[in-house]
Length: 616
Image 1 (spheres, helix red, strand yellow):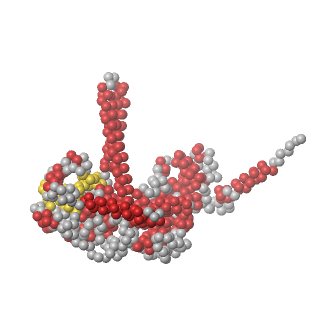
Image 2 (spheres, one colour; image 1 turned 45 degrees about the vertical axis):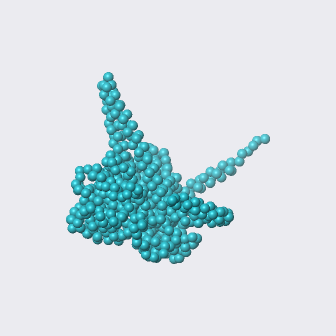
Image 3 (spheres, one colour; image 1 turned 60 degrees about the horizontal axis):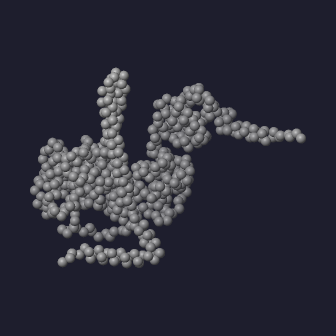
């Protein structure tokens, strides 16, 4: 029997394909009577200058005749090509736009833009394709304006983005998703500001009207007059899906206190701050982050275990030394060191400030070094402004100016240990002779003379002229330590030095350049130097440089590991472990093992106390 195959399915499939092509956005634009007047990309919705759109059209006319583009349907896919060109031009002209925004403007898919973006990189000149990574502020300001959010939110979200990036908690996430999550975190903090206010933070009060109210989040307080904007609004403005925003938000939330510390100021009337300065730990990791947060660049603090000049010179450049010792009032009165008079201090080039406030001697010792080396250290905006403002003031007024500098105090108090319980309002007890009180002083060279800067003294102590202050400072500190009994070993010495990672990397670059020059000479000599004597010397030099380079790379890796450890340790210092302890104790009580653990702990404490009692 003859089998008759029906052609109907094939015709139906062909008909469906033809109908789909007829309804495609590109063909609709071509078949529309207004196609000549309507642009392929709604560039006005992107908020970019008309010059960029005109340049994109000129580039399209230029590339559509190229062979690589002719095989990729340049007429039918004109919107995608123009969108790819707009993506490149917007970034090169400082108006970065995301793929999602261009997809909406050109009515094409991300895949189509990405495909032609790679093609445009191949056919265009380098001046168009070399684009820098877009800054988050470029996205944040535009999205917040579209959401009708308060003016302070873009700046706050940008600070969250930068702090999260520095902490390394959003590695592998795109800038768009991090920016969207940063906006949502700031909105979330404002809508739950009751909980933050209990922690002592102050948030602005301006509230626009936008979308949908947020529900309360248990554990942080009631929302109350929230910003009317939810996750869907932020996702729509940023063109990301809710799951992406939520995943980044979950990474940011555990670090909430650290992220908002530099954004929302502390209220002096709330919490444990009260306008005072907290005690901070004498640790190089703490001091290094403290300096970086104040804005000074390419600086780190290293702990010293030796006072010999060889150790100090191995760390050059050394900008100053910070010495911690037990402060004794009687020794302070009997110290024969003669400080410079206040009149001489005002006229000299030594920046000296009296310590007016308690617990600020660590930060004041750091500032005594930084502010006396402005030509060698990049201070940053905050410290440069403070130095220029207070430079013409007497030492006591400089100390008062430091007391009222909110920026420096907030950076200092960012290292306070979180308190889960409110402290009483009783006045602070004055220290007695039985208390161990420690104090920081600085040693810094100024104009060829070694100075000791102690904020509790009337002026800086001049230790004389010196051609090598690193050799002169050792005997001075050793003499200070000799004034104490032999049992006193609680001293600490730290050096403020340049960033070793930068210096080591510069040395690696210098070695690479030297190796390249030697290799070029070696290639030229191989034809002329038949005996190979000079070539052998060059190979020996290259070998030594390679060995040195490997050692430097190991040192750079070691420094990177050290800075990562600093960040981790500082995060632990700032973290509040009381809720964890509470939950552990609660779990032990539920398992009926808490009483047994308390009994064992009391027995161990009694045994320890008995062992510590002196035997007669």
